[in-house]
View (cartoon, rainbow, N blue to C red):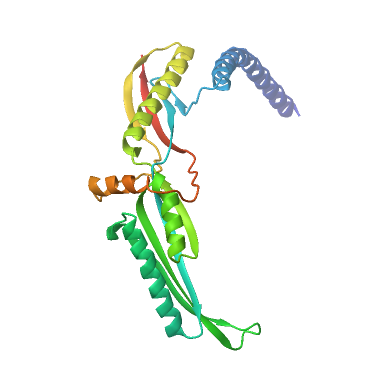
Length: 268
């Protein structure tokens, strides 16, 4: 009985001592915690003001920058379909070949070189009656992809090809021949934007910038980048041709040349 009482008293004493130690540590933790919360709130305030924080450490700061420039396309690519439907395969193919040759002749007259014309699709298949049992005719389709067309000449070209036998314009895609130079300018704007963000963040942290550690280029969309390969003589011939008449109205709108960078700065 005496041993049990002694053990209980000893345990109680240990708990009391532990409680006193915990109370002392708790007070220090409260002070440190308050400082951490205050610093976190300061960073959050700057983030709320529009700063783009990718990473923030004692020695470096990482930011993203974007540059965008609006441009008007100056070149185009079109997909032209020539479709025929006849009682036999031979008749459908013969008629389709004749109409395709007529369109090719028109393209040549409009200043389009053979190197800018591609047969991108050729289809032949039967057509059936309403019950799907008997063949009623044969359908043949040739699709020509025509590239390297100055934008001002597209409407006239489509109208001329329409008179020559095309049955459908399946696609018109626009390109910008000044893409490379404009992208380089957009890259400069992206780096400048990144530096502005870094300056704001370093000021908020009470430190200054001490140079760039690294710059990484982001995703680049080159879908409307145009590279001219057929020579200045062809381009001049097309420009002259576009003043010889009017055609379908073409409205290309604008394209955006966009550059993205990630920059790591060293802090003082």
